[in-house]
Amino acid sequence: MAQLRVDYSELVEALHKGDDAKASELLAEVIPRVEDYLRVVMRAEENAAKECVQQAFLDVFEQVRKDNIRNSKYIFSYLIKAARHEYIRYVKRQHKFEYDDGALSEAYESGEQIENLLDKERQRILKECLNELRAQSREFIEYFMDKPDASTVEASDEFDISGANVRTKKHRILSRLHHCYKRKSNQ
Image (tube, rainbow, N blue to C red; front, side, top):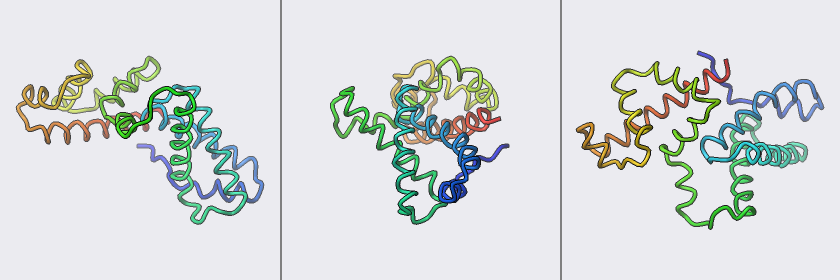
């Protein structure tokens, strides 16, 4: 199983030293991961994700240049946060929705994440990942894929488990699918 790196401290070092070749190599690895994060988790459109990640990187690069990054091994996490905040600012500027407390939590609904994974370019990988699940887990998550508006109560009745168990099971299966997708998309 390919392990995705989370320590991009070499990127900070390459930017400080002006090592454009190393910086470009690392950016080619990290930028698509941050774009995927915005597309899957924040439901960003492809162009918006690219634009926001580019602006976030410019902001982070400026902080690196000013030597304001305290712990360079967390640069990936910093990029993710910067991209997320840039996307939120972008959405506000575009007036795509009225900002309220519930709007951001909706972006994190796991059911919404499944819908985002179902676009045509990702269906093949998702199908492979679904086939790696145990039959019971696959049946469970396919229920939500077939009925994305199904409530916890409906799923609880369907599978004869408590609402808390529905949420826990759904979260765990989605997490496995997410990791499988990431692994297979980086092969």
